[in-house]
View 1: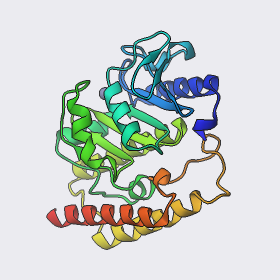
View 2 (view 1 turned 45 degrees about the horizontal axis):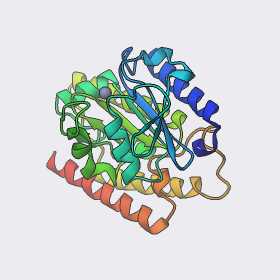
View 3 (view 1 turned 180 degrees about the vertical axis):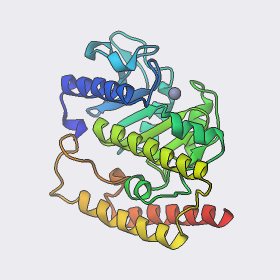
View 4 (view 1 turned 90 degrees about the vertical axis):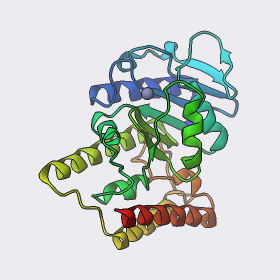
Amino acid sequence: MTATLSEGALRRAICDAGRVLYERGLIGPTDGNFSARLGERYLLCTPSATHKGELRAEQLVKLTLDGRVVGDGKPSSELKMHLAIYKLRPEVKTIVHAHPPCAVGLTVAGVSLEVPVVPEILFALGAVPNVPYSSPTTSDVPEAIAPILRRCDAFMMTRHGSVVLSDSLKDGVMKTEIIEHTAKITLAAKIAGNASPLPSGEVQKLLKLANEARMEAVSPARPASDTIVPSPGAAPRAASSSSSDEVVAAIAKQVIERLRQG
Ligand SMILES: [Zn+2]
């Protein structure tokens, strides 16, 4: 697990995440920000206004959980959002915020990936809703995302970017790629003329399958998440089957409602 990585390894994992996201076109040079819990008391966060594809380990900023900088550096301007997420979701180990262009473009057009046209995103991430626009870097951002934080591990900030909560940087980057890949398919369907959503029965079925896979993934035999292909969405919250079932039921209800609304 990321929480067990040494500080040096965790710093390298954050730098790797920035390089991969930049090289794959999921962030512009100074876009995005990433953070990770470092043990029980600290966080590591990307620095403000820095090329995220060329990060060096020593540039990362170490902070307490209430945002006090330990040592040098100026943390990301979106630190308020990261702190709010870690406070509300103690099981979340890493946060990856990127600007995937097709996915962001769809939010500008009012298209939500929460109403899926293909199954994989539901299976991998669960529902990925659009959060209403708020001015980046302000306290408006934590306020805007608060209503969906307990039920989602990934969401789109309208006209801004993606946010993936996870238990490793690798998983966060992979899920960001899934979001953008799904956005491209959705865009292609819209250009071709008919981006019809999955039937509601299929949505329910996929969410049930995803939940079953999560329960297997969090079994005691599960290997460390920084060395394997990561688990499906919302895995960190699946420690209790009853709470996980409630989460899935809430997601299914909301997705089906959105499908009904067309
Ligand atoms: Zn951003």
